[in-house]
Image 1 (tube, rainbow, N blue to C red):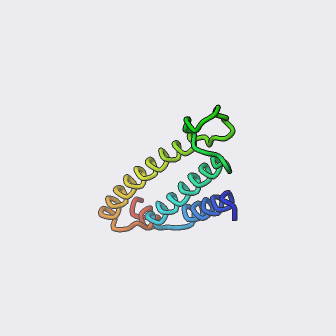
Image 2: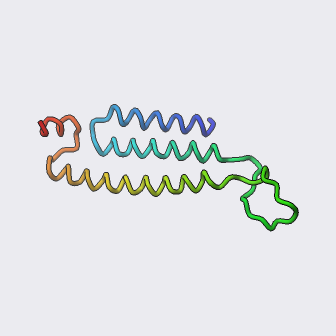
Image 3: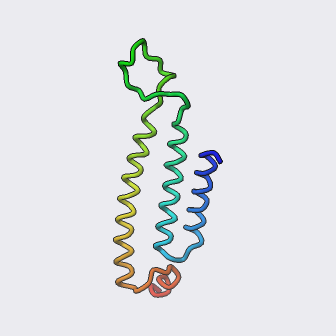
Length: 114
């Protein structure tokens, strides 16, 4: 299975979880699966077979085609930090929702809010 198919399968699983699961915590976990799928996709796009890291000083004139682009990897590190932050915030909100409404089921929560 290629990494693109793996990323697509992960994204599909996450999307199905977001759409079908009634529990808010499980929806949050499905959202995290979707975020991991996007990160896997971008990192696999940036991979170049036989390339090296862009560090000069290896002798000879540098050729750009021999180096891997570090920008997608750095952007995905930023995406991981944002993902952890949003997950932490969402977990805090879920704790407050659970303590106030005594449920994390989306349907029961909507019934209590009406």
